[in-house]
Each structure stands twice: as structure tokens, then as C-alpha cells.
Image 1 (tube, rainbow, N blue to C red):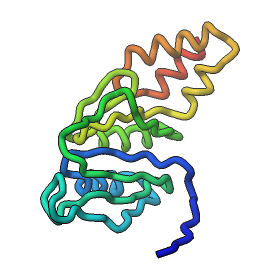
Image 2: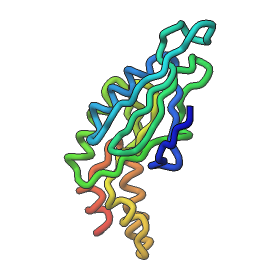
Image 3: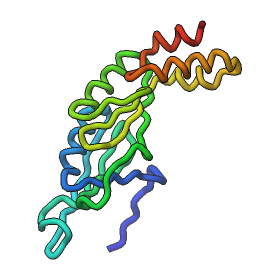
Image 4: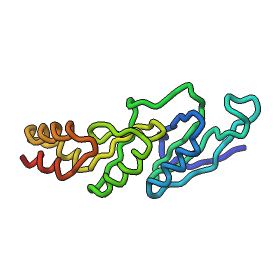
Length: 163
């Protein structure tokens, strides 16, 4: 069978789950706008997981392609890889923080682990601008402020930035 699929994204992250990829994909798609869930593939006979178990599910979060894989307990997630969610304002930060941290673990500096163990950084877009300031005193104050935060507070960052 010859198929000519148009590549819309050159690199696609593949997330390895034990056996709950379908649950994770449904969870993420409910949180991010412009999300879709594609057609799942399933394990057949004599496979590592029971026949009929979801093998892979392609999905999009806010238009970005991902693939979820049920691969068993061999590998788990760590903070070595995280997804950055760039937020325009505090209500957007608050919304993503609340939804993604539900059942997970909150961490320092805007990081959290969701209930599946995937690490996320929920950050305002203004943070990059502040950290890249030519005024190193301003960017250092922002860094010191963020190190004291769990969920990022834009107003506190602005206060630190402006001295």
C-alpha cells in the first residue's frame, strides 16, 4: 500500500506510557485548545501487552503533533524532558497549572509533574524577555524571584524586574 502523507511537523514527540496512553491522551486533549485524537493502533496476538490493548495513539495539542505509546513498565518519565507551556497572562498560567497538576506533583519555578509523570513548565512569555534583558541586574532579580516561586506569578516577576 503506497501512501503519500503530507508531513506537517518534522519532529513528533513520542510519550511512552505503561498501559494508560488512551487515558493520558484524553486528559491532555481536554486541557489544550485545538486538540485532536487520531485513530489508535492495537496490540495483536503474542505481543508484550494483551491483545486489543492500545499500542499507539496519534494526537495533537494546540496543533502540535504527538504520539502516545503503551510500551509497558520498562521506561518512565523524568524531568530530563519537559514540555514548556508559554502563557500570555496570569489567568492562562492559573488554568494550565490547575488542570495539569491535578493528581500530580507541583514543583519549584513553574514546574509540575502531571498524574502520568510527564513534566511541564508553565511559564509566561514575558519571562523570556525579562531573562534576556541587557540589564543583568534586572534579569538576576527575576531569577532570584522565580527561584522562590512554585507557580509563577507574573506580578511578582514584574516587581522584581522593575526593582
